Image (cartoon, rainbow, N blue to C red; front, side):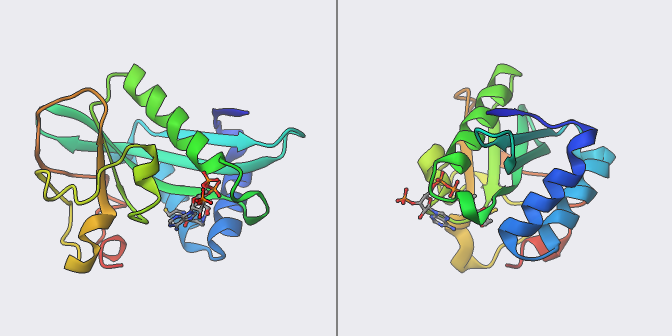
Length: 172
Ligand SMILES: CC(C)(COP(=O)(O)OP(=O)(O)OC[C@H]1O[C@@H](n2cnc3c(N)ncnc32)[C@H](O)[C@@H]1OP(=O)(O)O)[C@@H](O)C(=O)NCCC(=O)NCCS
């Protein structure tokens, strides 16, 4: 089951992020994004197993491209005991469906270049006309990805919320 997260889910969300990444950084990132006025609106989804245990989380935050409605996906996490069961894909598909229903044109992600294309993301968004918010080392060009949900022809500079605008998130 997947549903939108509420304020009451914060502890479960941070636990999933911590557990999936094996460190505190992504949990801290989620906390900051949820508190960041420039990231609003966010879309925060939780996945549960059949017993109602929270096992996965995905966060989308508001981004900007002139002439289009845009979001950034970061981060996505599934706890290790539940990997390879399609939870990550389901979280992405549900998120993209809800964003499309709300009129979103473009969704961006910086991440594993052979994972996100399974949900329709295209590698090397820069080559497709979407300059990343901060410079990305050339060897990671394919990791900067975009999915066009509406067929918009808008391209250009992508801006993201203040939290994710920090260069530390783009130097990999
Ligand atoms: C990436 C992650 C969300 C995938 O969750 P999941 O529920 O296991 O994913 P799915 O079941 O939908 O997909 C599994 C497939 O993705 C592949 N995959 C998992 N992580 C991958 C990665 N980093 N790069 C490429 N492929 C990856 C698996 O090998 C598997 O492939 P297969 O279907 O050919 O066997 C999960 O592994 C995770 O939380 N990892 C730690 C955090 C992280 O790296 N998040 C993504 C970067 S922001």
